[in-house]
Length: 233
Image (cartoon, rainbow, N blue to C red; front, side):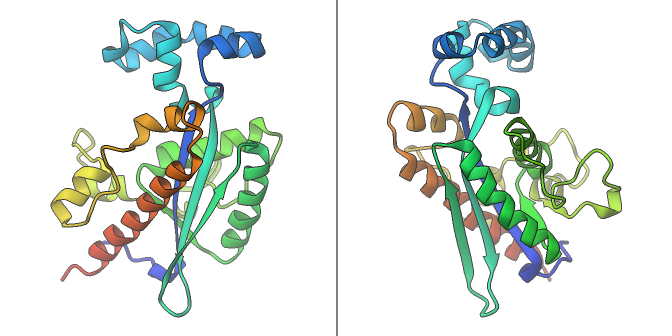
């Protein structure tokens, strides 16, 4: 199902938070961005009907991390299979987002030159555009390994396990947690932390280590899932 040699796959996962701890903080520090968030309040609530009754501050804490214009990247984990066949991970984490992205870009550029394929769950709809847009916002040119508007379909070097699992059934449930459950792979999710708790873990708990560990678990799970796909008889 996944024909790319596993030694040429760059497994990736990112963790994001709202640009500031709260909407009130955003209002006090970035008037233009806070006005834009307020402008798109109705968009968020249409996209997430369950948030209809949330205040602007609650909505920001709940959803800002999902939209590149109102988010920031706090952790990126990359994983590769080394020449010995061992799976190795590297974590990029920094409270200064631009510093993180500068270092990440160096690695992504090298991996692009070495013809690696990016692999992640929902990587085409979330990780790739989030990284690219946050780089642009931070005045950095995204590396070519990240597909852009003019990348031809056959030039896209990205394996999205969400697409693989959907098998063309685009209305299907296709979470990484569900995939792991039915394929016999231990999930990275826990009661302690999941994607919805990263904002609080970063801004309120100041616990970047917990976020890093969670991000790394996601990448290790991706590796196990791809191995399962490649071992099908």
